Length: 123
Image (tube, rainbow, N blue to C red; front, side, top):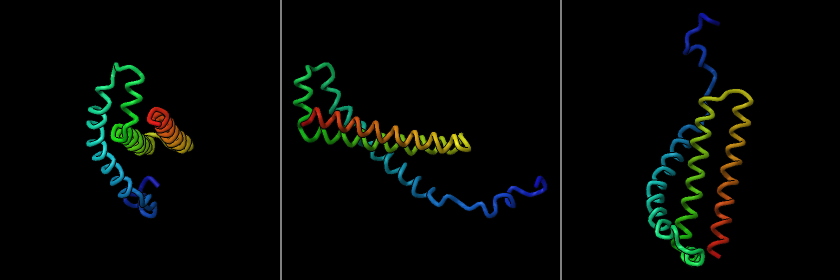
């Protein structure tokens, strides 16, 4: 086997066939975050240090609640995709599968908790 070239070792291995879709998902979420993060900062920033009742009244309005929810969801999905790529590159074997499943579950759980907290504040 040591006399085989790199190309010969790779022939027949195939591709995962999800690289382009994953690449575009990361690009789209990056552009979305490029717009959402400044919106979130400018909608959330004025509420820092304000009393609880004022914050609840502010996030009961649709625009700040929607911006916060979109930032949460898109941010966690972008983190999930990036962490998955990192784990695929640097961890191998059964540990890779376990860690990818764990990160995906953690991201979905954190997004759900964030949306639940936002819904509790907004409603």
